[in-house]
Length: 147
Image (cartoon, rainbow, N blue to C red; front, side):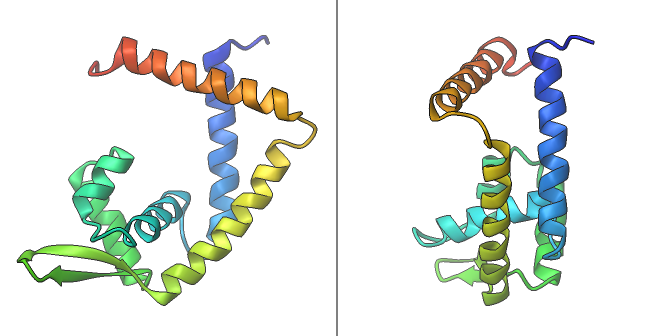
């Protein structure tokens, strides 16, 4: 069976997601949780990170984000802390355990990335990245706001 671009994207996305979940499950988190944790750790250095920021960054509904963040809080990866200027707002603050899990997950992801690009030249990787960015741009331009 010959696959078109969309078919390859679906297959690759599925394989990468499966591998990411295998990599992260050893640390007690899902792939999505690990990406959210990394986002929070990166952005909390610049200022408070709120649930709305996570929703926007990952395209999540409020209820989905709430469920993920509550589970992460239950698993002691982050806490919610009030900000001084508005007691209703809760900043997402990574815990020490969260930082340790993030570091371990990042190491696993680096190993996975090395396996992904094995035998692919730097030039081929650059072309792939440019083509993937163009496909994403095309999808945004042609289908943004539909469905």
